[in-house]
Length: 348
Length: 233
Image 1 (cartoon, rainbow over the protein chains, first blue to last red):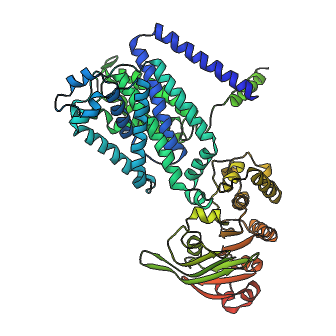
Image 2 (tube, helix red, strand yellow; image 1 turned 180 degrees about the vertical axis):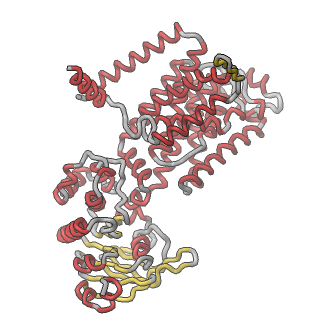
Image 3 (cartoon, rainbow over the protein chains, first blue to last red; image 1 turned 135 degrees about the horizontal axis):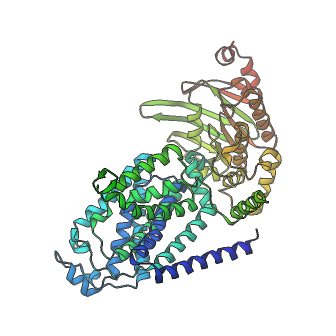
């Protein structure tokens, strides 16, 4: 298939998507639109974790920490000064932050940059570790962020959190950032640098023997992943309009990790598909937490039941389909054309 | 071409290499043989800068004792690690291109790739296949081809015959001779002493971290001590 035609198909697919979103905004209720928004944010978060874990092989559990940094930085930039004065009850907000204001786009960007800087800062000590140890260290750093946020009332408003964050993150912002993330990460993964990252994931010793500066490449990948995690956190904060330290528990990282593993480590298409499916399921499965009657059998509502179901699902994926929905494969226009032709031949 | 002088390596309290000095002249194949744990791999890892050591290493007269592994590869000394270590999820083509990571001349890289494809026609046939789908022998070809992509002056190979069927072992040693005929200097570490000594111009025998014997391949093949210890009497 020619590059020209692929570009045409991509534009067509994007227009269809835009048309759908436009239709959704007019016809779906607020709850469904909220889920659509969450889908976009979860895809951003999962893509960023897939870059770190799936493509570079760094088992990182620090996503909630990056998200928290992004969420707080961007929220403080978009909160109106009057709102800042009302919500900071424990201690007034420290000076430059109390007057600083930025447009939403700049605020989200700043959130991402702050998260990337934080990623850079911790990458130098933690990226010397490998495998499970890295997971534990990053998990620890995410907890540190949360504890610090809880104990800095002059900046984060402590356990009270930030309330009344302007709801700028509408469908267009979220899907715009989602598209940018998708494009950027696809470009990275298919570039020469992407191959270097995959080489490091496949075999670090061999990568070093090729003359690759392994630590530097890992740091870059980690910081890029942290950037998009920060962007995701910033969008989420504006979507929910309220954040507090308790929101950034390990469960948040777990949800993102679940999407990445279910979709396939090292598959972008898989991450997008799993991002949609799991976000929708997370909402839809709420019915299992209500009381259910199977004829004579009465099951009382158990809060947290859907997490049990998800843990079981993750267990089954790891037992029976470890590579996830897509493995390392991708859906491409060429692949689709091939499948169509084969399907046509079968019918004829 | 490559000279290591008085190398000492410690792993914690274990003295793994004791005053090892070896010399690899330009255009020759030199082999390092010895039993498990004799320090063969440690020698290669010490020379390529992957582990801490004391002593001096010279590459073409230049002191590379304290250079990073990246700088050493860029300087023209490449290690083919034990167990082949190709990148299984990348295609053969991508594997080869990563071998040329330290080079910036695009035209030159394409030329080298064609040369590698001519050396190993099998790799050209399988260029778009994932590395992990190749057979053991083909993976060894790929590992060697990848090392050649940086156009190194010296290649160090760690156990190239490990885990290969006897027929493939012969093929690998033929490839080694071919590469050497193309002007590449080789340092070969082997447990398969017989095969290694037959292709080598010069050989060292390592025993518990110390060089106990050296000589030309033919001399060592005839040496009674070597025959007894490594060639089964």
